[in-house]
Length: 218
Image 1 (cartoon, rainbow, N blue to C red):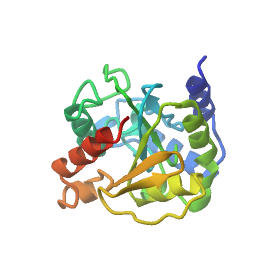
Image 2: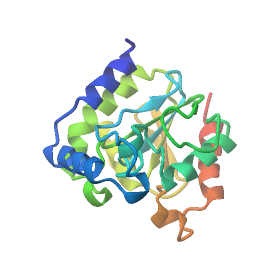
Image 3: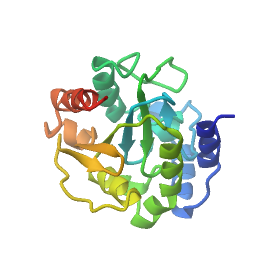
C-alpha cells in the first residue's frame, strides 16, 4: 500500500464529524429519483490522481449526488462536467467527462482533493469540520512531493490552504496567484452551477486558470 492509498483508507473510514456522516448516510438512503437504482457511496471521499502531480486542485467538498454517490471527487455532477472538460482541454485529464469512478478517467500531472471529505448540508461545512479534515490534506501534500501549483476552487478552499500553511488568507480573486508556503496558490471561482449558469465562471475562464498553472511549472 502506498502512502496515498493509506491516506485514502483513513479518509474512507473517518467518523470525525457526526453531522456530516449522518447527512451523507441519509442522502445515500433516500437518493435522488434519477439515481434510485444506484448504490450510493455514502462515505468520506478520498483524493485521487497522479502521485507525481505538479498540480493539485483543492475543492470544497463532495456533492451530495455527485461524489457522495460515485465515490470520486467531482464525478457524476455538473461541477465535474465543467471541471473535467477544462482539464481535458489543457492536457491534465484523459477524457472530458466523468460519470463514475470506473469510467477510465486518468489524470496526468494533476491530483484532486477537497477541504471537506463528506458532503455537507447546503454545501456548507462548518469551520470546525474543515479543520477536522485538514490533517488528511496535510498528509497528502507531504506525500505529493512534486507539487508546484495549487488551484483553489472557491474562497473556502483558498482560505483553507492558507490556514494549512499558517499564512494570511488574502487576495482571493479569480485568476489571481501568489506564493503561499512552498507552492504557487492560484485562485478560481468554484465550478458550481451557481457560478457557471450565471456566467460568473465561463469555460474559457476556467481553462485559462489551468493554462496559467501549467505556465508556472518548472
